[in-house]
Amino acid sequence: MRATVVVPVLKSRSRGGQTESASTRTPESRLEEATGLAQAIDLDVVNGSIVPVNDPRPATLLGTGKIEEIKALLDERDSGLVIVDHPLTPVQQRNLEKEWNAKVIDRTGLILEIFGRRASTKEGTLQVDLAHLNYQKGRLVRSWTHLERQRGGGGFMGGPGETQIEADRRLLQDRIIKLERELEQVVRTRQLHRAKRRKVPHPIVALVGYTNAGKSTLFNRITGAGVLAEDMLFATLDPTLRRMKLPHGRTVILSDTVGFISDLPTHLVAAFRATLEEVLEADLILHVRDMSDPDNQAQSSDVMRILGDLGIDEAEAEKRLIEVWNKIDRLEPEVHDAMVQRAAGASNVVAVSAVSGEGVDTLMEEISRRLSGVMTETTIRLPVDKLALLPWLYDHAIVDGREDNEDGSITLDLRLSETEAAELERRIGNGPKPPREDWER
Image 1 (cartoon, rainbow, N blue to C red):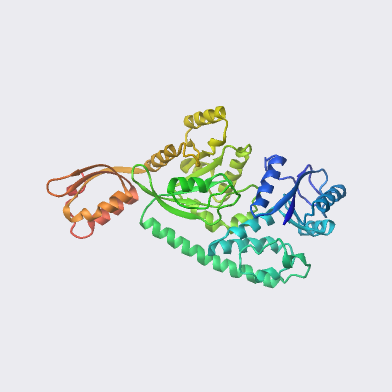
Image 2: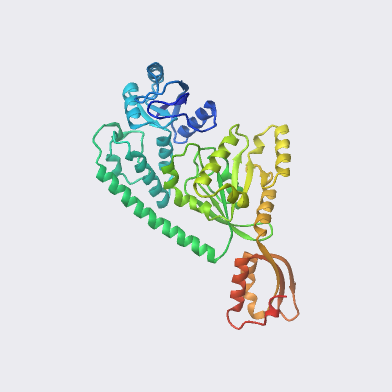
């Protein structure tokens, strides 16, 4: 479908109470991002316009002159879809569709469309459905026949949404309640999985970042997994978990999560909270930033704002966050060298290229260092009847030294977390427990 992107730049408060977004992004970067969002679902963007709006209109947002200018562009380019990079009220959406004789969606509608295309698990589909219905709850100028569809996201690009029929509020609310109950069950299941992981206490390292920052490419580089990694906004929606070993042998779980984006509506964040809880549970958070993007500072602020909404304040983030300055391979040599030097002199920052692998070894060492900060050191001697514990020890502890003794026992110098130390003592205690001096000195 041929699409036109319109970026309104509001200059004042409208009579309807709308104001310019708090985003610090430039209009040009907003246009580039909105175009990328459209292309992420294979739309053919034939025109993009930045539209200054001095007096936002409650009925149409844009003034009559701008509406006519855009109408002429739509006719000239044969564009049947307009994406407005700004929240639209139901009345504004309906009136603009009438004026332009074209389909109109706002930023939230476009993001939901992408989420609907990307969701591949039951949890992802439920979350998309719920976010979609909550978005539509206040937009009763639309048709509701798409609620019969099973696929998440519903779809905004055609079909029954083009007609104007009275919505059945009860049908909508019943569907929302049903989805919330189903999602609660999925959340409980995920919580059970997390509880099981805690019994086998591998630390969790979560990747977060603005969409298209390169999280999935970094995930693949570190783990060797085949996660979809494309130069595409929201290439990842459902969380992916992989076990991996750090340089000193410790096993951790790496979690790749949905990308964040500016101006993400509250109800969308709430709907995806089940997915984002992987971040809340993480022992360490890797904030991946695209340092080749001119707007990377504004993007970073958006990510930190959403983390704050999830309950991770600045003090908490300081304790368990590493900034990963990614895509340094795209920088000019002088800028690249200066950025690597800046990262080396900063605490909790590592500069990398997930594509070339530059800096990834340093990142792995930093992850090890940060996780070892809460580890204890001990030396144990495993008697012959406890040697079956060796695979568990190599999987859960950092083995700094090993000595095979003449009597068949093995002496190990270990570093491990308090939880793992307690688990080791419990495992050694199963069956006839040797004297304490036999396993620790």
